[in-house]
Image 1: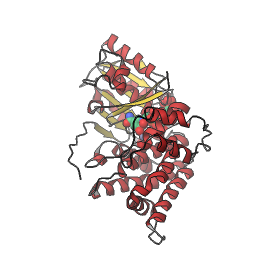
Image 2 (image 1 turned 45 degrees about the vertical axis):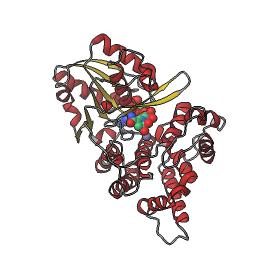
Image 3 (image 1 turned 180 degrees about the horizontal axis):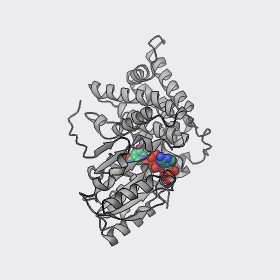
Length: 389
Ligand code: NZQ
Ligand code: ZN
């Protein structure tokens, strides 16, 4: 196990009705708030009204930035930065899924930076300060509610880029599983796959002697595998929604990265899909993981065999470690399919003509390798996209 430091500063406020306390939670930080949300699901569900009532009760003055799209765009975040600077906003509240959360986090960094917001994403400048952010989460998936990252897409060139900093962890996250009852099945499934993705990326490491975090990751994966089909059948099953929501936060809050180095190639390969075709990130991942695993499993057959046995209950009666590993990959693919997710370009009606371009973007014109379990060059990335067709 590697040396590590770990601290997650996000306060988690979990359970029924907790969104009604949001005004009190914000007051210690500021009484001038920017409220960031998406395309209207929070108005349909009545959540917007409850949030506004709580803010008003606490005497909080707020402005609004609606209209965050899935795969959120840079342009709206720039508008949010402008509002924050002009109106001396002291706190940003996101109500919605990961896209609203990521927009709020990007604004929080941009509001404390004098240059162009995209400089931070391009690495031309570092995040040195942020406005505090609170998140009321309605979609368990991205883990942005306590993660160090935000991901935005620049329309020009369709560049989807992540920005990471410890400063980007939200001050608090309100997690009420009831707020996820209204999720469409496709978003529920894509969210489950994204959570599994954050676990899989961490699981496939070259680091020896990480048994404790291996077991935690396996348990987290099994939790999603058990409860995701239940909530697809019973969308208002509080117990299962709660298990998924809490597992989704822990999957990406840093705890399960302790002492190990994760892979993350599949996330980079997927981000090109959602940048170009605007599909849900989790649905892009269900296409990429089976292909990535098929391409790299020989590098560490024992770890893929462990994944098959511990996560997918493959028994040891198969002929060889390789056969066990492949059976694990096959069961994962079948599970994604049963959730109603695509497992190939064809399933999602994606064209095949852009593979070269996506591999180029992903590897900075072939000058950069991605991933850690196995370093992948542009030819590997092309091979993975081809396996996923
Ligand atoms: O916009 P509204 O009307 O709110 O509708 C949304 C949106 O259409 C809807 N929705 C959300 N909660 C709902 C609901 N509909 C009904 N009831 C509810 N309770 O769902 C749709 C998708 O929402 P979105 O926020 O886009 O999805 P998600 O949470 O999956 O976020 C995806 C984005 O996060 C990035 C992804 O790349 C993608 O851009 N990620 C961010 C990460 C991070 N910051 O740490 C890590 C991830 O790996 C990921 O890359
Ligand atoms: Zn993800």
